[in-house]
Length: 226
Image (tube, rainbow, N blue to C red):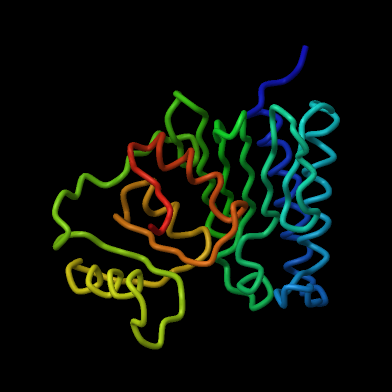
């Protein structure tokens, strides 16, 4: 009998966490990828380990990983992996980095896990079963007024030069509080009601796939920048 998707996913994230923590302590050598972003052996080894664990249980599933690329084909189930979201933080010994894993079924994300080991936080969700932080069910904030809302934003803007940037600056003026956490951490805060809004630009599917499920199951909403 096959194990549940969530149980296998948790096992994969557990192994990725241990690989990353071991390498974090060692401060591994940094290489630069073709897209000019950094990568370490921890990124590559943890992604390979997650794929290996999942593939043994579900050999007919596809994968889309930051380090290994799109190997999803036309599979019904596709696992989306960011082995270390926040690699620059990982390299700089800033604790806001973690492991992201999502499962997509026919273009719908049905399971998501985000794990931040050094903050001792793991949030996850399954379709129709709610969202959880360290085994406690969570909900998004009950804030209803923009003027009372808190917002986290991630992108460098020197000046508002287009419609989207201008709209974001207008929103900055309207909210009660602005911060710039970046990477996976602010999504934990939104899903658990500690932050109201996250805006992030220039990201890939593997950066946010788990949060499409997690924030929805926590009672929130996600959208693209438009």
